[in-house]
Structure formats: C-alpha cells, structure tokens
Image 1: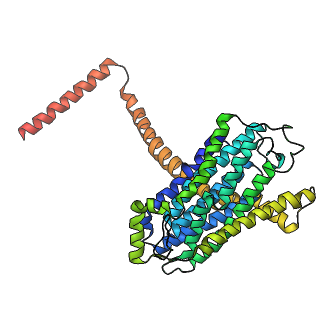
Image 2: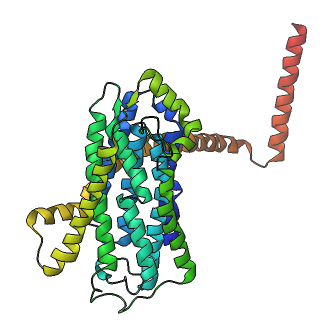
Length: 413
C-alpha cells in the first residue's frame, strides 16, 4: 500500500492477488475429487471474507479500506471454488478487477485533488468539487456491495446462491453455514464501503484538512475512471441468464456457458461421484436475501454516518462498540498473534540451526577445519623449504639412491 496508487490498483484488481483463484479454478477437476478439500476451501474463504470485512470497518486510510476489501472479496471467490460454482468465482474475479481498479484509481484521484490526503475523516464534501470522481466511485461502491443490477450483484450473489444450493458429500452442513456467514460478510461489505463513500464525498470538509478546497483530476485520470465504471455496469451481462429450459427455470449465465470447456471436466466428475450436488433452488434466498443484506448494510451506514454521527460529534462511542472498534483497528491483533506463534518460534529454530550448522559444521569443521589442517600441514613442510641448495641436492641424492635400491630389489626378486 506504500506504492503508487496505480500499482496498488493493478496488483489488487487484476494480477497478483487473483492468481490463486485462477489456479484453483483451473485445478477444479482435482479439487472436486476430495469433498473435505472443497469444504476446507469454502470455510477458509468465508472466514477470510468476514474477517477482512470486519477489519475494514475501523480503517481510516482510504487505501487500507480498499486493501482489506480485496482480501474479503478474495474470500468470496474461494467460497465459489469450495462450493463448486467455479464459473461464479471466475466471474467475480473479472468483475472485481473492474470495480476494484475503479475504486483504487478513484482513491488516487481523491489524493491527487486533496494534497495526497488519505485519511477519510479529514476529507468529506467532495461530491461538488470532484463530481466525476464522485460518480465513478459511487458506481464502483454500489457494484461491490451487490446492489442489482450492477455486476457485483450477478457475481458475488451467484456465489452465495451456489453456497445455498450446493451440498458437499458427507458434509451437508457446510453449504448452509458458508451461505449464512457469507451473507453476514456481504452485509459488512455494504456497510464499510458505504462508510468509505459517505465520509469521503458526503457531509462537510474537515476543519483540519490539508487544503481548504479540492480540485477535480484531469481528463487523462478521469477518463480511465469512466471506462472502469462503465465496465462495472456492463460486466453484469456475463452473469445474467441467457436462456431458460422448457419449464422457464434453469437459466445459465453467459459466463457459465463460456467456461464450460475448461470447467466441464470438473462438473462431470462432480456429477459422476456426487462430490458436490447443486440443487435447482429458487434464486429467492441466494440472490434476494443477498441483495437485501446489501441494502441493509448501506442503510445502516447512511444512518450512522449521515444522521447519527453528525449529531454526536465529539461524544464517546458506547463501551462495547469502542472495544470492538479498537480490536478492528488493530486487525484483531492477527499480526501480533502471527509474530508470537510463527515468527518467533521459526526465528528461534533458525538461530539454533545457524549456530549448529553454519557456525559449527560449515564454518568450524568444514571451512575452518580444512583450512586449519592444511595450515598445520604447511607449517610442518616449511622446515623442508630452507633455501639451501646443498640441502636440496642431498635430499635429491638420497631420493635417487632410494629409488635405485627399490628398482634393484624388484629386479633381483
């Protein structure tokens, strides 16, 4: 996050962080052979989605909010992989690339127009001063929250619908559990993204802002935001059903049809071994409830940051909320826990191995011991190198006599 904003947009939207999702989708024909592996992927994915969303609640840096949002959305993608709707995971990967790049570059535009300010609590009121950035950022925000008919609704909610409709062999509880936890994560997503938008573009400008006024970015920056905002809307076409069966049900998304050749073997294996069974349920629970959760999160954020908070400026938060906020701001101390459980033990073992292997065996016995042996051997041989020609001639003569004696002994024998 310390890098330039375009670099952050590229890494978080389209390259490094999405490589794992692509890899798991391509290896779906192997993953589907193990129900427990699929369950593990789904559970870790939904836990990641919820954990990162809760951390994003309390972040004040505009790029940190988007960074943890990326972690959360990756969790949703892996939920799609784990419950067997690989096409939905791939679709969310693509739609996420569009709206997350728009959000990151929109954050860069906000920083450009506000003297590189990144604290959203010191911004506010930018919708009049930066209208193009505001509208594109709003479109991307609505897309990531999963509001219909934007692209995020058709990709993320398709994953939740798949979790609700799927049943993993021998682990029937995984699908419903992942669905309801994912629904909570979707609600949290709507809340923290709406919070980010309201604090940045709505309300009034903070008194301690770096500059009294902001300015809109130039055409070269804004035009890219417009293109990405358009893709955030147009990407919905890949998730809409393109045909229905004789009964009017069973519509398949364009992305599902497009990915049939590479993902067909995994679907065939799942049907053959019944590793994952996708039931043809009504989309009411999968889509409508997810859409409702997104609306609830948005409305709650609007009430908190546009109605309640302006009337209680300077007042302390309730104790329970303040405690949760401290934990979330500290990322639930996951870094400290990682330091305690992983870094320190591994460092202690590495230092012990260094002293034994590097210092004792390699430096002491290997390098130092070899050098010491030849140094001592050389110190013994130095007595033969006196520089006296008569001594050298004597040694040569003695050696010659010994050689002659040895040859004569061998011949006479």
